[in-house]
Image (cartoon, rainbow, N blue to C red):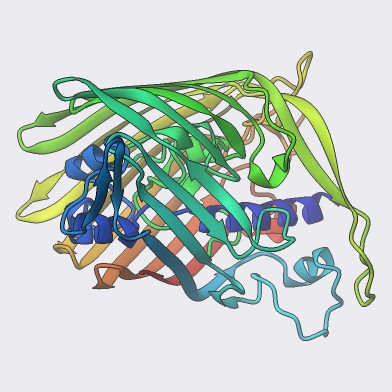
Length: 460
């Protein structure tokens, strides 16, 4: 049963992660600027200019015309973009166990990620529609609609935000960002560093990550699992020197809520500074999650494989703690005219299983933590990169070693290479390998401790 649960959890995490992106040609259409103006090396990473655009509530407009009047300032076109991914992914999970978890018998002809699987847009691969941009001089919007929502029941809203940020002083904007997301967590309201403080803003675009191993090597925040459903409101103050984000949120997203609403009982605080160090774009920050909020889980009554029947999905509401903290930093610049970025993160999530509600970011009995380093070099500037990531982690549990009271080590490394066929078309090769006490034979068989991905992302 443990293996089945772990397999299903990894597949759900992969689908969630694949449905997130921030490099959007809808903004290129609005501003009349190329993708490279906002993105460092490649999407989704941001440059200082990209941070400024985001901090301006997506309102900057360039070559595109405007419809203006008293209290009205809209682009002449409703701007949209489509993201697709296709590729091949293989890990070392047990193929027979994977079939059993899916309710299929060996010899059925079906393949699992342990065999190696191909994916295309709309079938295990991404196919998402993004809509957004300027809504007035000081407000904007961004929404993502996926082919499948998190409940797997059809097309649905994956995330949406409405940034409202007014200029309150020279080089300073402040305001409110209401938002909801199925899988980007409390930080979705406002984030601009490339450290993985938010699930989107990591060193590389993630596609085909069926065992959920890529982002947790690049970012400690992603290792402890802060990319959750969330609905909330972010109070933001931002300047070129950094930003403060104070968010009230609940641990549910649009796929969970329906029309029920959310009580914003948890708190997220983000403080980040950005500055120039001898021509290098640098940033450091701190994150803190605290409080408790509602979390919804869903169980279905069928159908049995091989039959045609109605599926009844029943939600169960539980109160969970939302407790963790993280520190991070980045340096982006050039070495011998080649762009290079360095990203360092550390995160901890305490256990609240004893005498508490259980922590949304750590289901174990011990503290979950990780220290991560990632770097990427542009071997052909604005065209090709190579990169690596390293994680030294503690899982917070003893599922691998089986030793009572143990905190299993959970380490990993990653190698990647990317090539931009065009500014909005990128080919990635990624390999991850995980090791440590956590990776027993059973856990490796369930989710796979290694993974190789060839991914083609196109956004237009």
